[in-house]
Length: 408
Image (cartoon, rainbow, N blue to C red; front, side):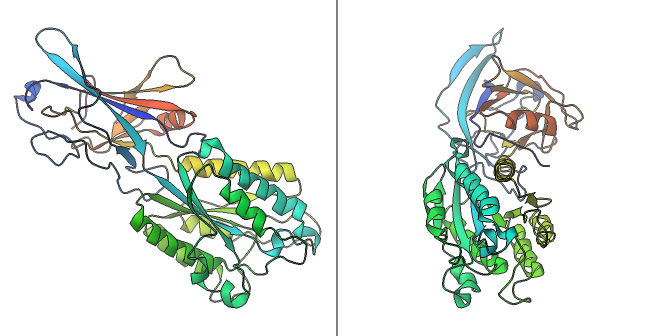
């Protein structure tokens, strides 16, 4: 699923209400039920879990952190008769997303030695859009690194994975001017100072090793963004082939690291070689369907296309799966007493999403497992609507009465 999103980190609120009763459910014969994900058979939850889950594809998986003080923000409300409900609100945040950029700075991007290596048509518009992404307020909530390839120091340094273990810009919270400054510093002062070679396999191997070490210190959701204008070359066909690159990308995906590919095509001039066809193999191996191929020839169009590709990548990092928060201390969870709403900057009142375990309706949600639910999953239509908003809050309201019928 490829969606263009503007949202990065949605501000989400889970409102939890449960019947008072010392951990029993009066509508189920007083049998205690455990709260999902709290690891406590009595149904009491501490709210201290991280909320992180396995998420091997962007746009799916349990990747929301429902932290907060379980005693904060509680209030009471009467529902009629002798029954009373307590509500609790917890701030919810998405799992931290890290984007590791591998950026091609070889002479084919702008050396001006032949017509299709035009700096004005390739390097300049791509760089302008790249800088804009790293400085865009909409990128807040992400962290990114930037590694240039080929590395400086000639072939002996260029064709070694260790050269790319340390990014030119380390993992940095966005937005940040550090990336634009690094790009300006690496931009050659003249047409004869460009670096030569495209050691794609080695930069991918080094970047993967960097990520593996980084996430030991900072767990989160990682992806590689490869920006290049051609096939691997200059490091030996066997060691730096598309097939070798795909092997590294396969290994990354097996380690839950997706790879996005942005291909910068040659301008449509006579004699320009076709250099991007096999980049789709890299994207497919990386779990992101196909490469974004940017046409060049018009700088404004190229810059806009790069920006659109980055927005899709940024949006694909946002999940539509929300782990169910534990109920308040001493209370019980009833899967049929759940209502889900969202409120956006463009709506004046909350919009209720219907429950549909089969996701046959447009604006609906479902449980990950109706028999033993641990997460709420927005169906595709609801996911697209919620994530298309720049700012949105999602309400997960555990009611005191049955409001949905969950199939067995």
